[in-house]
Image (spheres, rainbow, N blue to C red):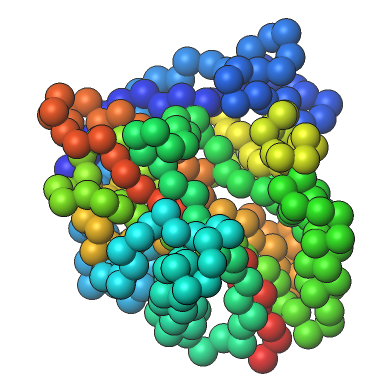
Length: 295
């Protein structure tokens, strides 16, 4: 199954910024809109190519992988500052996710896993569906540290950097765990598309900053994308709550700092084949930092 549609958020090819492109959630910060109307793209069904592949190898090769996973969480709105006894994200989901990373995604590696008891919920009356192509956090440890500071405190960001700079650390990756919640039917409305990182040229990546979005008021680092017909977009049609899509949104390895990271540009998109009465998407995403240690 292939969906042909247009995607929002491509950066104009003629734009040559001398710094990050400044973006507001509700529009560009600068006087000239950085966007361009790109041709329709094919978003391919990722289920057939993943069939028969090992989960860890597929993640390594494509930056994303779909996992069968029946979570024991019932209350997906119980994270954050909810007391521990009622916080199912802290009590249930975090241990589930850690097991997935250690046993299925990065088996045999020495890891330190950093996750908090919170998720981002999307759906009716929650956050929007992020219909704009982007990749989170930028390319370098400095980019990541600056984003951490924008979302938390300078002290928290400095503590992360101190852990990362230890000689025994080989690298750091952030994995996003994306799934539907509170849905009985297979997902038709606003599925998520991911771009294979190996089909994205470095010159098509554009440094960007979200303005006025983080709670501290500081800009956050991310990447925007110029269109190229070589880019390959994928999705998993008809996802169910018994499935979770894991994809990399930041990666930096100390021994190969110039290597292209295996991280995925991504966006929600309106499937033109979805029925008009498809139930609105309810979903969540849980971002997990993974310190990879030298063996």
